[in-house]
Image (cartoon, rainbow, N blue to C red; front, side, top):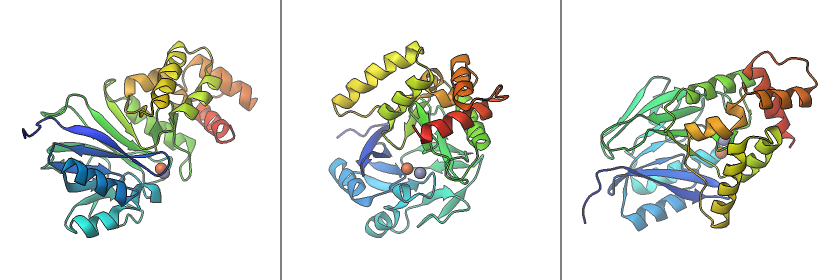
Amino acid sequence: MVKNTLLQVWPIPAFDDNYIWCIHDGDSALVVDPGDASPVLQYLKQENLFLKGILVTHHHADHTGGILQLLQLLGSSIPVYGPAGDDIPGRTQVVIEGDKVEIASPRISLEVYEVPGHTLSHIAYFANMQANIVEPMLFCGDTLFASGCGRLFEGTPTQMSQSLAKFMALPKNTLVFCTHEYTLSNIRFALTVEPNNANLITWAQTAKSLREQNLPTLPSTIGQELQVNPFMRCDQKEVIDSALKVSGEKTLPSPAHVLAVIRAWKDRF
Ligand code: ZN
Ligand code: FE
């Protein structure tokens, strides 16, 4: 068998709608947010892969619940990268904004962003262009979803707005690996906010047909989200107008104010 030099990224479905992303080179693998060990073990076995590291975005159990079992069964020396501040089971390396996670195999370098909102210590991992990847890649946990964003369990709308702004500044071709298949319900809400967004209407058809074939709607891209995600479009007239109408406010002075309104609206949608 010829060893791949380009990295591949595959979704391992878990629970009802989680994706545990597996980054591998045909031999060595990393997994992101393993909430459950058994689908990961099964996938690694089936693909003949060796687990070399675990990346964690935030402390919720559906992202961390499988870590200890993976370490127990595959080797307690596997590094586990995760945010500070919360108890991440098995974590060996605390990473903060600006840190670089350098993995030897599979060969990849990832930059860490702190993206509070969904949780206070939530982080994301960004792999910019490098020798063995074809597009930049973002592993964003529950901060950004296709056509949506994470619920604000711990952070404020202003924090989420600033976190999403970090993603909005990334290259448009960045592949976005979200951790839940929430796309169709997010699109239903997005269409209520922006019924006239032509890109969103087209995307709704594409996403529906992908799900009918039981295919993931992910990864998305930053460029795509800028066109269809209301939480990344809080400076757009139709989004602002909808937020004004729903809130009854006369003005919403910043994108963070608009985000606060549409996030609360989505929570009761
Ligand atoms: Zn979460
Ligand atoms: Fe989650």
